[in-house]
Image 1 (cartoon, rainbow, N blue to C red):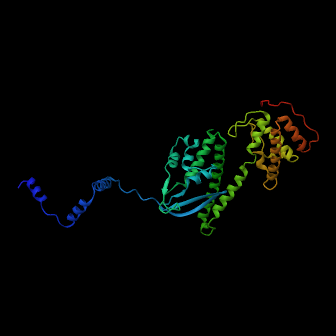
Image 2 (image 1 turned 90 degrees about the horizontal axis):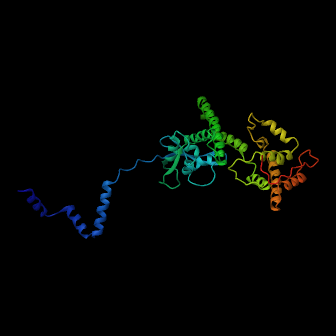
Image 3 (image 1 turned 60 degrees about the horizontal axis):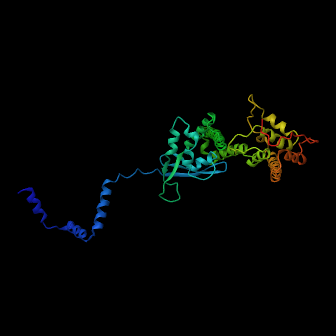
Length: 352
């Protein structure tokens, strides 16, 4: 018998069992439903294999750095992870937004020859157990990436890549964190070597880190409002370039006059003695960084508020620099000054 004859013969054999039921169900389906089933079957045949299982957070907590609360996790593969927004907050990056994109745009990262950090930030770790919604994956970075980011910011600062006020602030935070991490790290190593880690309080190292960060943040806290500098430019008739540009050097002399020489007798000399100029004429610290937190800082804040009030009054009346200084000399004389000091009538002049 030929094969073709066999096929014809088999096609006429009665169908029974499950096959018979399947044919019956198929005959009841509409053509559209049969097409849909065929498409789904084709997709199933060509679908890729199941993706690898995501790591799971076995431990979670909150890392406190200064006033920041940064969620952190330990995954079941041993990796320590923090969130992208935690990364941005740690370096002083303000505002809202997706942390990964904001960090990736930093010039400090894009200027690096070694692209490992950029790659790490561009490919965050996805893991389970970080989101309040069960089953939703979270994005994070290995905790060591934060230290790599800090080091990149400091390298960029040394190379002169950071130019804006925001970028310089990021570098300040990075320097603070690097020093704080190093100090906490050596304590942890000593505790481990001596066995003290078994009896020390559970949050002892984090409390020490928080103390270090708060101390350094207080040193770098912004004490002169932007308006103070902007008003000086308005009163002098200069175009205000914003805080992102370096100010005229003469503004520092105005601040010595308006602030430090009028706050307390001998204050300016004491502050300058604590922070002498180097061979290039620059000071390592800002003068206000030497003011005490309990007395000096409140006194500075009160004095600056008085200066701002006089600035606003002069600007509102259309007065220039000379009339403003006359007002200051009348109501806020330099400590030890008995006579009004003359000022050259150079309204609107550009700095030399």
